[in-house]
Figure 1: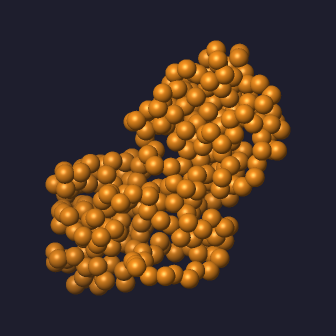
Figure 2: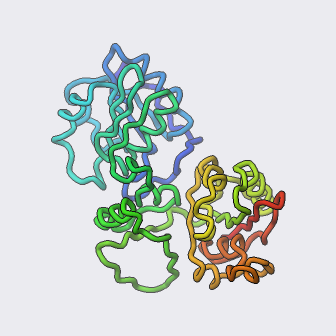
Length: 326
C-alpha cells in the first residue's frame, strides 16, 4: 500500500460541520496512521466512520510520517502505543489553535485516548471511535466532569471561538458551574470584552433556529416529531437547524437534550429578560401564570440571526411547543 490510501475521496455526506471554522475546533479531515500489520484495523475504522467525515486517509507509519503530513489534517488517529505518538509529535506542537489534534487507539479498539487538541477535534474523534467499541478516555477537565466546555459548546451551536485565549477562564467557570447562559448581542456595534469573555461567531448565514418549550417530562420522540412537523412547514429539515433555543427554566429537560443530540444540534438557554424582549405574536398562558412569555416563539425570534419568525408556535401531543426562527 502507498503512503496515502488511494481511496481517500472526499465524502460530501459528512455528519459534522461542513465548513471548518477558523479555530480548528471541528475535525472534518483525519488521517489514520498505522503500522503495516494493523492496516486491517485501520481500514475498519475508515469504513465505519466514512459517513462522519469529509476525508479519511490511511498513512502507513514511518519515522517522519507525522512531520511529513503535519498541517494537512485536522486530526491524526495513531493506531499505535501512546508513547510512540507522543515522541513523534511533541516536537511539532506549536499552538493549540493551529496544531492538528492527535488521538491514539489500540489495535483491539479498546481505548481511544486524545493526546492533544481535546477541545479542537480529538474529543470528537475519540467519541466517534466509541461506535467501534473503544472507550473514549477524555482528560480535558470539563468533559471529564461531564460538562460541556466552551469549545464544545461552540461546535454544537455551529459557531467558532473568536478569541481563543479567553477559553481558559471560561472553561474554569464551566467546571465550577459559574458560566451563565449564552448572551445574544446584535450589531452593528463595537464591543469591548475582558479576558474572561469568550466570543462565539456563527459559521453560516442560512440556517434556522428551533424555539421550543414543553411540559415537564416530555419525551424525546415527542420533541423530534414536533420539530420535524414545524420544519416541514418551513420547507427545511434537521440539517438546516443551527441550534435549539429555549428558556433557562427548561434547562433540565432530558427529552429535549436527547432529541437535540439525536439531530446533532446544540441547545441555547435564554434568560426571561431576553425572551420578554423578543415576545412572539401568539398569546401564551405562561405569561399570565408565571410571567414568562411563550418560550417557543420568543426563543426562535431571539436566536434567529434576523429575529424573524418563520413558523408560528405549534403544539404537538399537548406536550411540546415549537416555532421556527431565522
